[in-house]
Image 1 (cartoon, rainbow, N blue to C red):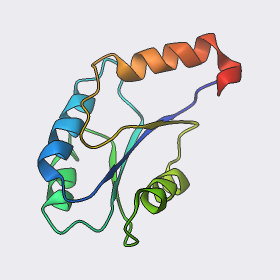
Image 2 (tube, rainbow, N blue to C red; image 1 turned 180 degrees about the vertical axis):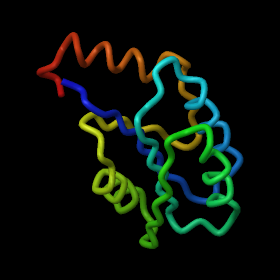
Image 3 (spheres, rainbow, N blue to C red; image 1 turned 90 degrees about the vertical axis):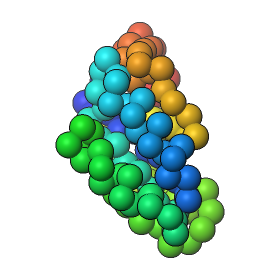
Image 4 (cartoon, rainbow, N blue to C red; image 1 turned 135 degrees about the vertical axis):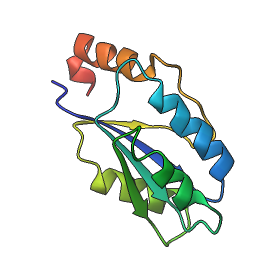
Length: 113
């Protein structure tokens, strides 16, 4: 049974794409309980973009200094508190039903978790 949903996003120096990604999460029909954004040693305005969503999303900023997707993804998994972890790439925009439909699928097929 799903108790809490965490969306994990890894990003590095893609502030404009990240903004579109986070904006798509604001529009979800089922809001995630937590959005963990792992900043993988960005040198642009990534942190500023993340904090600009603080009032619209249950967002957490996490910094990972070791550059590389495996390090950053593992950091996100480690700090996420959800029982269902959803990964979203920073250059993607989720359909507004994305979280809701994944939740429905997990309820229909609970052994898939």
